[in-house]
Amino acid sequence: MARVELSDDEDLVGPEGAKRQAVYESIFGAFPTHHGKSVSRKARDEQGLSASALVYGEIAYPSFFATLEKIRTKYGVDKGVMQRPGVDIFYDLGSGAGKPPIAAATAFPFKKCVGIEYLGPLVDASKDAQREYEARSDDLRKLLDSTPARVEFVEGDVASLDWSDATVCFANSTCFDDDLMDAIATAARSLPDNAFFITLTKKLPSPSFAVVDSEVYQMSWGGATVFIHQKLHDDHH
Image (tube, rainbow, N blue to C red; front, side, top):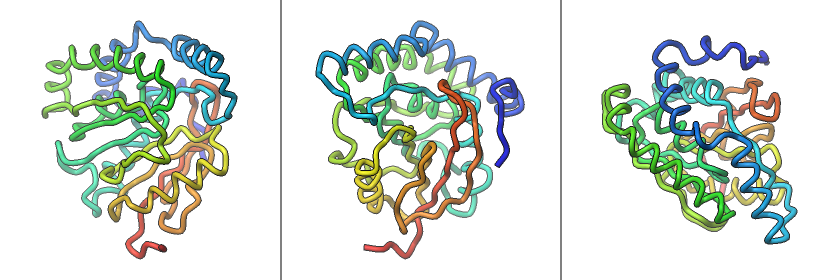
């Protein structure tokens, strides 16, 4: 697997991706990484939560964009995923301060991009960013040449909420424990055939999915292996 350093941003996003990244960065200009970390830490301290799954970390836009582009231009082509605007649905399981759903919405014209987050204060922070995203809808419509995705944020447990309509899922799973990974894998069996599931560091423990791609990219905390899984037809129930 090739390591891609953050300094290779331009190579990862290309000219068009750079324009979309600029919109994304303008949205989150007032909400840097340390803001999300601070909100997360305070919420966990106040609720006495110490689960490793709640440890905060953020994607880097170039690597996230490049991963979605792999699905759009390579793995999803014959499967009909990310091939038409306004059709596909993106979910982020454990969405923190909301960066992956908004990154997905700036990268591709999904029908909707939904973030599910356990900590209420982070959901509130996400909705602040959502308002910034919505204020830039005209800019995005021009860049995407399509209606931008509807972005939503939901407070709750990813293991108990319904996200079975997703065609592309993402989980920043580096700190997820085995029980949570197993619960997510079980729920993911309800996804439609050929749906894609992106995880970090840990593979989805399910015979219903095959890893089609893995590469090490830079994130806010350092390098992480990004796995792209594809849902198989012959689901094992």
